[in-house]
Image (tube, rainbow, N blue to C red; front, side):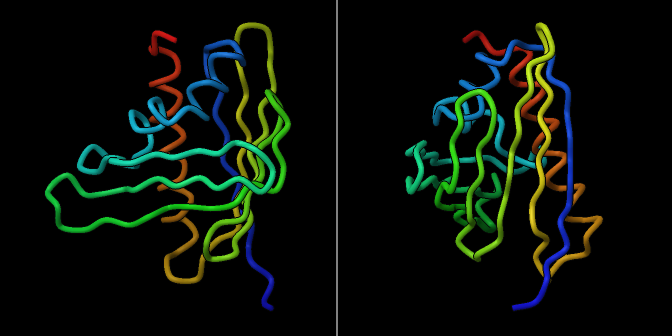
Length: 141
């Protein structure tokens, strides 16, 4: 199997880690932030947050032109610290959470896929993370 390039993205969320964790992991919140641009949305979110548990997000273009399922199986879940999972296409993803007072640093790394340029993948995932940051900072949780 070929070695995949690992892409890293980060965000500092101006919210305490308990709130960040809830927004990141609960389906009713996931549906509100899990999109890379305004013309997409997540119509279905399911999350069985435990080792061996599955998550699924159905991402669709708002105009109905296309959509796809984004899913994986959890490899590690360490509350308020780490979530790692294997995507349906066998790529690995790791999300680390670090509390810094009333802020939370999210450090996410993922293996690149081979169909799209690295910069495009990084920009797309960073855009979703930025949406998460904006949502989590304003959410009434």
